[in-house]
Length: 272
Image 1 (cartoon, rainbow, N blue to C red):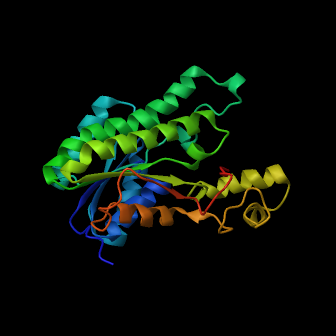
Image 2: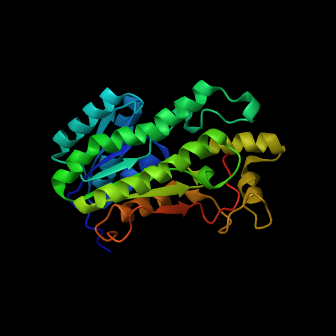
């Protein structure tokens, strides 16, 4: 299927590794040129070379801390200038280290960590959307895709769950505001997803259980395990990339303001 992304221009935050990297790769495979942005330029440069070599598309690395409005505004404008425009924004940036800042229990939560988590994940996405929208309007065609998380639908993580829910509300609100300009806005909830971090997390889980590392995944995703999902395996980051590319495509006009869970039918979200 031709997704109609040939010659489109995208900005992917959190694009140096993990889900963001997988999304940037899939957009490039479909013919888009992509600016990848995150905090560490050296990681971005390595990822850019890798995806460029694989796809032949332009992949431009730009250092960005989404908690800083001036950086967001500057990088978004530079991305549009260097690419020749902007059609797609993917908000995949996350709290440093990839984990929520205030895990709990509630008696131990520190206000500053909770607020920092919101500042990066929710307000950071809002800053990026605000900076990108004028460029999307110029095209008369745009896609904003927010990468949230399964914690929005499960009890437990007070920080991550709350800011993920806030992304759902932002998605719906922006979709109402922007549809008339040819811009759709959607949200994806990944569950437990295989990324570069997974081997280390599996090793930690193995130590916790006192079993070999190669047994952890089979045990946790066995059909009778409370940690399993419906497909009884871990979702790969590339599968989040496929879904994002479709939502970013010319085939997905009918989908906006929606939240799509992509955790393999998880009931109890598992975060190693």
